[in-house]
Length: 251
Image 1 (spheres, helix red, strand yellow):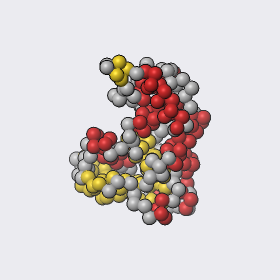
Image 2 (spheres, helix red, strand yellow):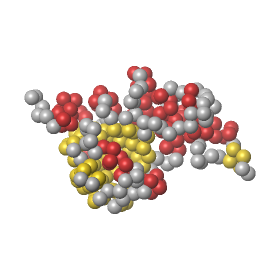
Image 3 (cartoon, helix red, strand yellow):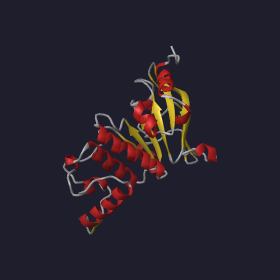
Image 4 (cartoon, one colour):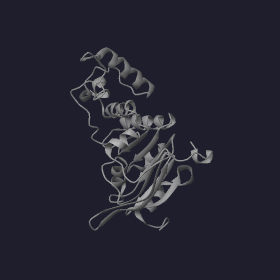
């Protein structure tokens, strides 16, 4: 994927975002840009500003200064409602799923299909199966409780729910944390497929192998600033780690 060479404007852009908490400068002029059809990885050590940036994009926090641009529209700040309306969705580590509810019920939670006050469960299960198949999420039985699923399958349910609700910009916060090899592989394939389907995908991860495996570009943050943006084919793991730590490559 090389959207930049096609002269397409970024779908999501931040310009000079600043955010302080009393005497702590969490963001110091952060500018990023993300395109449809790509995976942008944002990496950095703890305290680099990644979580603050995600919360500003999700509308949970307001920046002190700066601009957020989404598909041509400019905002000084977002609310959670406005972020959702613009299609920004974050898949957090806890996933926020109802473990005792089945897959279909989780997908349609808050957007149930009903008629005269009665849930149309059969239709919801059919729609759930179609959506999961489209996203290539392997869940054989959508009537199974989510609590019985593997970590990778649960991640898939969370993603499918966001896609159903109109998500266009999908932010993954440490999606493979505490997952085994097979589960991690399934989640990484899903993230890559979402990009190929034309979504804007932002990946927050400490796992450099995963970052290099599925990302198109890497944005390195350190101490509240963007240090550098790199195209994956034009960099190395050593270079990225050196930028994260602030060391000089080769020392």
